[in-house]
Image (cartoon, rainbow, N blue to C red; front, side, top):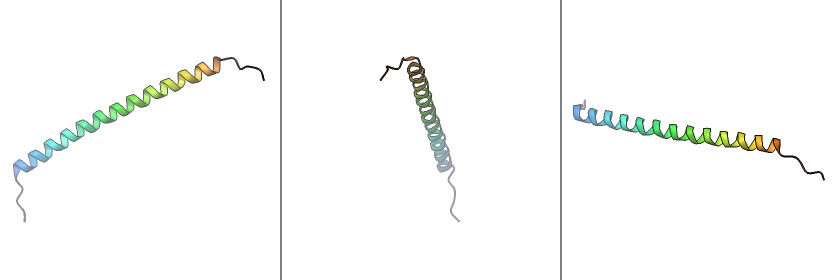
Length: 56
């Protein structure tokens, strides 16, 4: 049976925490981009609905 080195476990735990923090930041950035895009689309829709349509 292989032996488990405490230092290896500590390194793996540290890497997992670092990766989780990076993933969380990435998800926050994605959510912020999505929210910004949605807000911009709503502003465009509102502006278009207020724009008079030229007769044919």
